[in-house]
Structures are given as C-alpha cells and as structure tokens.
Image 1 (tube, helix red, strand yellow):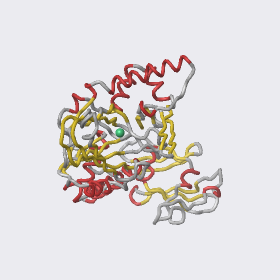
Image 2: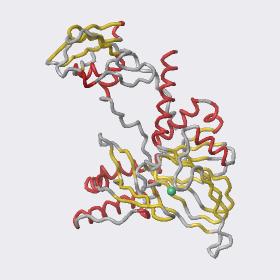
Image 3: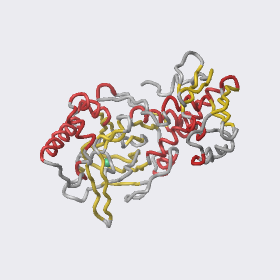
Image 4: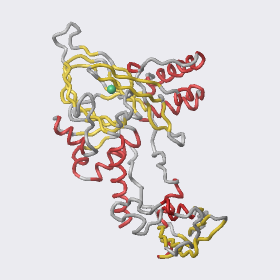
Length: 391
Ligand SMILES: [Fe+2]
C-alpha cells in the first residue's frame, strides 16, 4: 500500500519578478524562468487583497465590483516584499490594490476551479488483498491519522477502520470525525438487524448487485459508512467495484457507449411511505474538465423514460456493457465486514453490493455529505501543509 500523504512537502515559494502592461492586460513575470501570466486590470481590482477590498476575518469580497470603471488602468506597478506582493496604483482614483504572489500563482494554475483529485483506479488484481486500512485509535486521536484515512478514501474510493468498538455510538463518533451524519428518509445513524429465523426462507437474505445509493436524490449521499456489529452465519461478503475504473475502461474501449452513459440523464425515484423522491443523473457524471465526477447506477430504482428508438437501443447497449463490467469478478473486491471493522466508501465512485447470506447480522451505518467530507479533507491538508511549511 502506498502511503497517500507521504512525500507531500510544502511547495517551494513562487516569487514575482516583474509586471508590465501589454495590450490592456497586466503581464506578471515569475522568478526561475516560469512563463509569464496575464491578468485583466478589472479582475485584479476585483480581487484586491487590501483590508478595504477583502474582509481579513471572513475573506469575503468587500470591493464594489460594479463601481470599477470598465476601462480601469494602472498608473504605477510595483513588486514588493521581495517578490511576494504586486502593488497597483490605479489611474482613475489613485487608490492602491495589493495582490499576493501566492494568490496570483494559484489562480494561474487552476483559474480558480477545483482540479480533479489524484486518484488510484483499481480492479481486483491491482487492489490485491491489502486493502487501505487505518487503526481506529489513530483516526480518533489526532488529525494526522484522520488525514491519512480520508486521503486513502480520496485515493481509492474506500478505506477500512480497524479496531472500532462494537457499538453504534462508537460508529457514530467515527462518522462525526468527518462531518455530521446526514438525515434522510431512513433517518440519521441507522441500525439494522436482519433475522429471518421465523420465515420460510429461513435465515436467508438475497444477494444485492453492485449499485450506488440515492440515485433518486438530487445530491446523492457522498459517502457511506458500514459497521457490522454482529454476524453469526455464513456468506454476506460485501463487494466493491471502482466505478471510475469501469468508466475509464468504457471510455477507452467503447466511446459510443461512454458518450451515452455520460450524457443521457437517467431518472430514478423512490416512491412510498408518503415520499416521492426523484432525480436525474447520467450513469457516468463528468465535471467541466471531462474528469469523472459521479457514478449513479441502481437499476432497481431507475424510473421509466424513453429516448428516440436509435438512441434508446444505444443506451440499453451501453447500460448492458456497464452492468457486465461491474459484475465481472475481475473488477470486484470482496470483504467480510467483521465486527470491529468499519468500511467508509465514496458513494459517488464505488459501487457496493452484498453476497447472499444465512444467519443473523446486525449492521449499522451512516451517510455523509460529499461537501462535508471534501471540506474536512481540505482543512486537514491545509493544516498539514502549514505545519510542513513552518518546519
Ligand atoms: Fe446500498
């Protein structure tokens, strides 16, 4: 197992070396022969970091964007603080804007958008038997352990916690290390006991094929945690498939199927108990860069919809390919969730299922919102980078 946060030192400081006006744009140059980057004067005024323009406590914009002249132009430019600051004196009112080099550099790299996180796609062979795991005590005791665990989930789409006390309270504490437990139509923290001893299908519970939860939710649960508190029986292994690996395979092998799966909005619904949830997602959701964003697949919950005949048959063909690949043992890992081991997985990436089982099983678990997991990971990574930079 590769350590997900090893060798992530703080980036070396990037410093400005000059600034000049070219074609009504402000071109900033960097030390160490990094190519220059151009910014519009209007944008620079809008993103001024002075106290009057950016609230230093809340980091909220205070500048009146719509009072900035459309033809705003600099009267003077200055690189200060040894290359760490760009100062611009504006021609129209003589005011000064201040922009940190680090801020300009970060914007130049991403244009202000999140980039796709580094991920390690896997199948049965590449994952092997050594699943990403962190001891519960390390996750609970400090931010480094929590960061390592969440980084594993970000990289692989799942991770295990070992040595978890076998109670619903301890499982909830583990979940709330990340964020608050999501309330859904099923409640918050759930605790489920299946004991069919008194039914004819004695002690038998059917297999569940690979799927993602909440395809009928506009904001499908981002993460899910399972903890098997008691198991007395046979079978019941949990299965996981890396949906992004499947999407990657289809993108390479069958571009037409990929196009159908990534563009056709598939409706899904939950109907009953006074509830009618309904949402639409493509099976393979992509972000604005074409990177994988969200797998949404649950054939049981798909709502009726139709397309023109040619596209309908192309969609069914693509769906069949997707279903074949997620049910291929070469793409699947299995694990028996023993009491004391909790599974946390990315419900926007990993498809989960369960083998049929016989016996008594008590499972508890929780949903977590994607944005709360992402927030915690950003905060922990920023704190770790600051510690690294301060050394
Ligand atoms: Fe499920």
